[in-house]
Image (cartoon, rainbow, N blue to C red; front, side, top):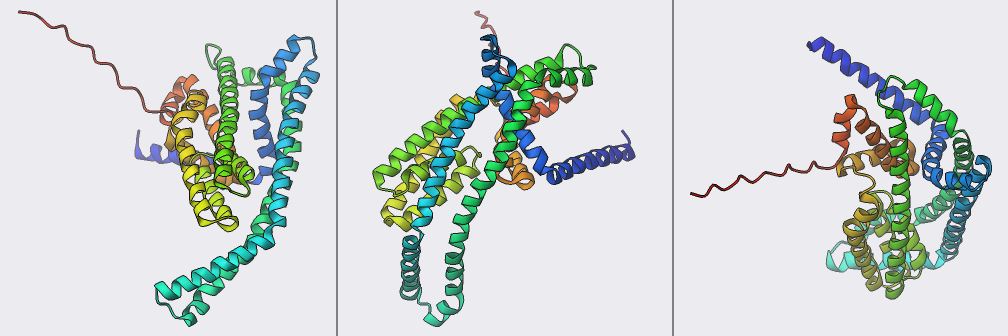
Length: 359
């Protein structure tokens, strides 16, 4: 291939990728709930089909499954909202604690680092006051995030219901659109995608329950005031690979340090690390790892791209979206090399032992 052809090929791909990114960014209000609805519809297809076999119509089967899922999610949402409101009501106490920490930090800097009070007042005090003033905004942002999630959940519920009802129309559309693929590749892609997403979400739900239980037990033992809230938030943020655990651990340590003793905050950090190590090396590979075979590089890159385009929801959607693409790449011969790029390390071939010739 000539250099000119190579440049044209790369320019075409770059233009296509740029257009897709722009569409995803500016069409967030429509595409984000649609993407989440597609993931949930793939996971809810099996229970919906089960109710259909029991004699219910597809509309009623899909509605019942979604209402049950919505009931569970609403319970979790109400619990977190109540805990966040309690946290906001205790904010004056937290502010007093932060003021004490600021005074202790100033005394430490003066006594140990031999920094004059004038330098502290000029450089460090404004920074600490700004941090203290921003803390109520963080709490308000958390409440605002949960409020906006309700609107996103409404559209996701509607889209999921429509996808489950008209899944035959969607399947026919895909079969006709990609009829040039041989060997029933479209049907295989749909079936494998459904199995992958269902296994991933089921495993992820069980993992979240285990992690939340372990963290709640550990935080309660060390006397963390918001043990259950911190455990639930940490388990939910742990869904985001790598970044979620680090962020949740920092938040848990800071809140515990402000509401308890430094000793309790240290133990909260240690418990978070221990639970994460157990989760990443034992729980996650067993429950989720065998469902989604994506390497760490593809996971991290997809999470960063998802956060840049769609924020926090994009981070949650990153892994299942890449898993769907990997299924597609594995089933289409011309795209198989992309599936290899996203997958785990290939197993080395077993060397055959040469027969020993006895003299």
